[in-house]
Image (cartoon, rainbow, N blue to C red; front, side, top):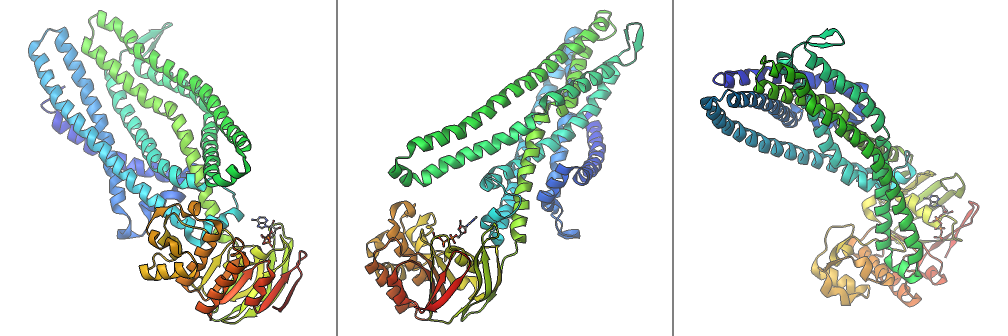
Length: 597
Ligand SMILES: Nc1ncnc2c1ncn2[C@@H]1O[C@H](COP(=O)(O)OP(=O)(O)OP(=O)(O)O)[C@@H](O)[C@H]1O
């Protein structure tokens, strides 16, 4: 090799190979995205990241990012080629005792090594920052779609049912970005490397006579035959890993969820002394994880053992074939070393398909889970929810029928109307559908038909038996769902709902649901009504944890502060009648009766 010409030669090679690679990469990706199931899944999930918009609106910077990463892949291959020639020259200089050539190669190594380090660091930076941006996009898109149309709630009624959506958002979206890059760029590197080093091997290869038959360029044919045969068996041995990887993610997520529940319901478990049951559940959840881990271990041992064996044989293979020519003096030591390197590169490149089988299996599992997630979100959006008309000054139900998911009617054709300042109390035996009727009016129950009109979402507030307190400050919990509330107003409201002693802790950040008693939480929820001043308030057993005296003062407060608000309460106590104008009695068989309180 003429090292003086090498800079220009390498630049020319890079330019030609890069142009060809860009075209082929685009064509292969487009074909895969159209013709394979997983390619289509990928495109549906992330195609917009690269190809949204038209003309100049396309995200060119992202495409340029991919192009830059591709360039670095080619640069890495070219560096390997240069190193293989360097080794050839270096070993030959030693064999021929040529000190001048030896020192030339030594200084050349300094240059090549510096280039190699700079390339590796830049490559790592570009790839990682590309992955971070991609991940950011994926996360934003998934979270927005999950929240939009209330898919995080309605998803439970939609097909396909998916487990652990949080794992899909947090973990799988990350894997999608990094695995796609690793696999696609690995593939490009493998193909280019295979072509380049096959060329080198070709020039170093001589015919070989096997059982009287002469094989021209034996080395090239043997390496291909060797790796292709090995790949067929590797795919066969590695196939069960696809399912095992899928199960691994699923079982671990389920186990994590069991642990999270124990933490969340710690007090109830502690009061029941339910540790033994919890322990049993956790043990059986973890046993499934471990059983799968063993199955994966055995299968991986077979798979890795096979791959390692194949790679080890490949170490000595080129020496065995070239040794007779070295001893005959036809080739130099440098040629043998370069042959071994080129053989190793071709073998490694060809083996990419064999060794990546495992990663590809996990990748498909990730695509499966993410596609399941988006299908569930789409299913949730497609659910037929009852039509809720917006009317600022009334609640009106006309022929509203509410059913259970199995079709059983809970309330048949309800007709009622409520004007500003009026209040309705819903009563009925347990399981008769009181809460479900409220869910329907919140637009959260797909198993209902008929018409309902009520103020807009932002003017309605739902108080449930167990109020939801977001993580963060007490101020945030009081203002919820509004973002904030002023100091003076917050303290005044806390006084009104008899939580004045918490006035000093407005900005204390902690899990307030674990600190406040259920009764205090319910009072805080009443405070929310005063803070948000809705036109319509739904109260689902919202005072169940308070005594009748406190219930009386909370309802009186509501009537006094929000005289124009409409109230719809679910409750069992007779004392509630005093605060309501109408009573809706639900029976278990779908019948209902409306009377005055
Ligand atoms: N997500 C669900 N999937 C299946 N069935 C449900 C679901 N939610 C509610 N149901 C069923 O719908 C019926 C009505 O439930 P709902 O919670 O509305 O009763 P309720 O009158 O509020 O009872 P309670 O007074 O005990 O709170 C019950 O039989 C319940 O099992």
